[in-house]
Image 1: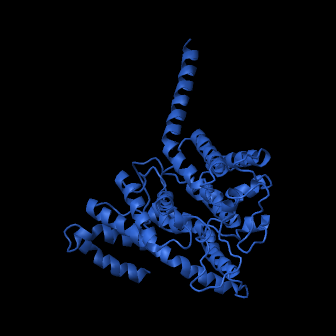
Image 2: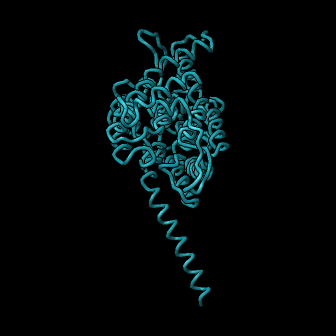
Image 3: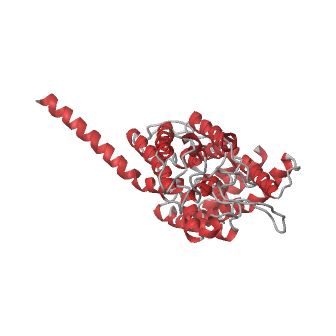
Length: 396
């Protein structure tokens, strides 16, 4: 790497002001800082002195996502071979099948998203930020495996331009870019985002007997009081299946086990705030407890335990990786508790009373992204009023 760095350093003056390729400075700088993390630390003019930067932060989040990503690739292959009745395949075959299934989505998200960010940075003369390192892998992870690449490209372009760049780029967006992409896909192409055939990639000409690709939450939303959620071949889904994620869904969201590993990495490294995660889980559990003990005509299934409710779908993934986004979440400590709790409550509430949309986590996070500034405003003003009352009492 030292030899590569010396060669690139020789090229660097050509891309700086006065150089032959100075107009491409932003592009060169983006590649340079991606390959070589700066060792400089702040010395003056700031309140916090350390060597952390956005690149280190984003890479740590990507590392936390890797357990879900790798398991999701294997699970795609597992669900595929389970659906076609060919379970004699080994672990590696299942993983390779899933890898090649999602690779076009990952490449599409990064090429389109980074391409737009490079163009905007070049036009504005700004440095290229690393925010899309996380968004680029998150977007395909929360989409069905059969999402056409051209749909994904349109959705990514829309999200990056209208949910990020128009507000100033990385650090200025008030909505989670990955969730805006997912919402665009869901409302623009609903038939490709839900139903019985989008969560398991079967392949052309594959024989399928008794196959249903509906997710467990989809089965609950369209079921009755005696509905028993099953896997894609009709076998009842166990608590162990739910915990380890052995069922169809957006390919990286199903495994609670892998999500907990990612959560531990984020919390230990300080990349995520525990207040949002804790309050989100508590809020979701309370709402799931209500749904379990007081079944309604719209949601008659009462046998599903509260913890199983939290383990299904994208709830845990959203609480861990979406709700904790520091750019779009609340910044005050009290606000974080309120923000997380409302996400948990609203996500489960949407599942219960909106059978047309059995998930809920995406809408809950996006809704609270909109209210996060208001929550912080109210918390700050409440603190100001409390302190003013203290001053008045002392003066009197």
